[in-house]
Amino acid sequence: MAHYKRITKREIVKGPDEFVGFWTKAYYWSVDNTQTILGYAMGAIAVILIIAGIFYYRQNAESSASAELFKIMKDSPKLGAERDAGDVAKISDQLASFATKRSGTQAGREAMLYRANLLDQKKDAPEAEKIYKEVMGGKSDVMAQIACLGLASTYQNEGKFPDALTLLEKFRQNSLFEEEMNFMYAHNQELANNKVEAVKEYKKFMEKYPSSRHTAEAKESLARLS
Image 1 (cartoon, rainbow, N blue to C red):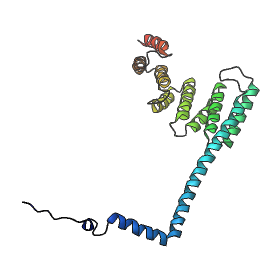
Image 2 (spheres, rainbow, N blue to C red):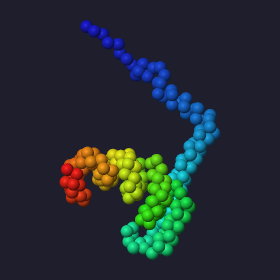
Image 3 (cartoon, one colour):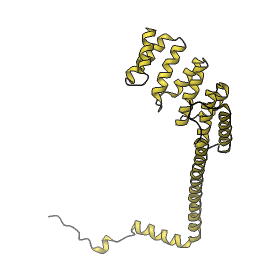
């Protein structure tokens, strides 16, 4: 018959409890090093406050810039509408000044983009191209994608079809404007007289976007190229 040794309560707690021992030492260390702990705590709080301040400043700057841009734009005619040449020049100058003052903000980039569109409509392609590229600035966000469409359109109107194709190829994958870019890509292949590539791209476009507003135009192009 097996015999089991009776273990008393004293024996259960016999020896140092590692968890209790650790926190006991930690407690006495904290008492002896109160000033050190307070220094670290204040340092951490200062960092948090600095980060919060930067975030607040940026948010406030963006809100202020957006409100200022709205004031400039509210009386501006829509793109494509008939404008007096003097009004266009005035708006263009206001946007240029605003973009310089608010550089680094989203509203500043929006002003640059709108100005590039105005210049493109005025047939000032070189200056429009320059601004579109500044808005893109190596980025791939929504503003950069819109600038890509504007610049590709400028290239297309200038007959720079290879440049338009290179630009669209870079941006069209997984873009919010993928449909528009894919159609423009197929169209520029056609304009560049790359018939085989144009047919391939138009067919891919129609398969992927059967209900697109460009479907009828894509069908006409395919019939013309076949």
